[in-house]
Length: 245
Ligand SMILES: [Fe+2]
Ligand SMILES: [Fe+2]
Image 1 (tube, rainbow, N blue to C red):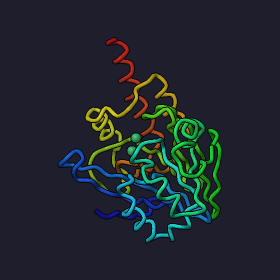
Image 2: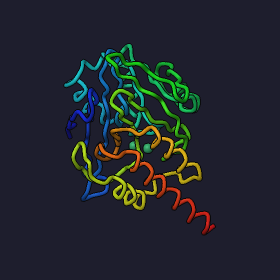
Image 3: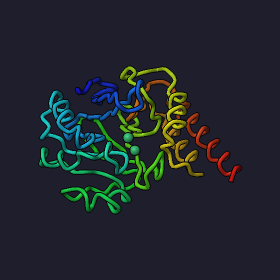
Image 4: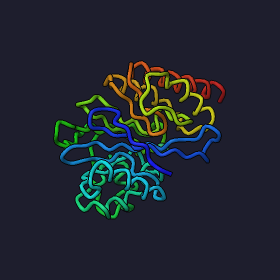
């Protein structure tokens, strides 16, 4: 197993690991994003068992001990399983997450105290790269869920949103909504709730230029339209469940 590395936006590298055993024959990808700067940030640590692969991959881009920030969408093994391995390798690194994630899990589970981010707070990485933290509770799952938006390149690190099967190109302009709907039908991974549409439309309002998916290709194109369509699909699912109740 090896990580494939692609630069999907200026200074943002996608480190992708394909796992054939999940949802065969399509397989499934786990994507981790290294944002360069004076203070580099890794979004998704990788599973604990993937740490040697990710460490080697990060090492192709920067000395791993230079990592300054470790962040992720929510507390789950594929998002943050190797958090403490990274903290051990990078002495200056801090885990950065929202208030809920820190209170509920990270204050206890992280080997060093995490940095609590308020909704809308910005981490300045230097070299013009600024990451804005946005709370998205329960979306697509996890009370502590949040996303990061890199303002200079207009890249939304959107975690499990738009999860899809298979191993496509690193960056696509093709439809990502249809494959996300198919994956939701298969996995039922989202915590359907009435607030989903509003929150996802809020992300559409940012009008990102690139969506960096954790499980799927990164997308460039009309990101606002894709987010609106995803919001509409979730709203329809919630409505039909309520109607059937
Ligand atoms: Fe997840
Ligand atoms: Fe994930």
